[in-house]
Length: 264
Image (cartoon, rainbow, N blue to C red):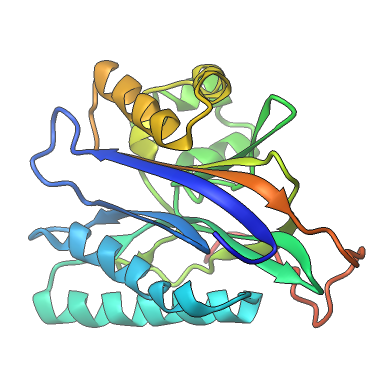
């Protein structure tokens, strides 16, 4: 809650109506606001998700976090998950998505990251914008013009991810910086939410619920009511105040990076 971005946050999760184990995990402790959606047999998914987030807990004492810091945490998480997966022969893996509150030259920035099909959104001026690009088969089909976004919501292949941490996948994470503004509302969620609740309804709930804790709870409850076919997790983060001193067009050290390509 300190630093160049003053935040308030809320988190909610539910196992859903069809699963017996919640393989989602969330970290909502300044400066990290992240979710992970685990996958793998023999109860490996929940371990993979928790392992991914544990790699970021060391940032709790840091005033700022760089892109290289985030990449290092991602690499450490991937290594730990792969070691566990080999030992258990479990094929463990996880998605990872969210933001880290940080600063550059005293100005507040969101350090955003994503691998897999969990999502990060931002609300500015009442408009909901998806910041991340899904690493999924249906997203590739959409980009190729072979599938519409509307049809993708009901496509049986919608949960096939093309990048993950672990699960035998070496695809890169997207990592980038974007300027924060006072009034920003960030939503980080697993696909258990977005598979059940359309963006228009998500935007409506985020606009109606001022308390981020209640907003997260209402979103998760809505997904459960609509079927709850998967685990559901939502983190809502509000930027209450943001320092903007000396913010320039470029960030020293070439720390703006976004990987747009697909893993091979």
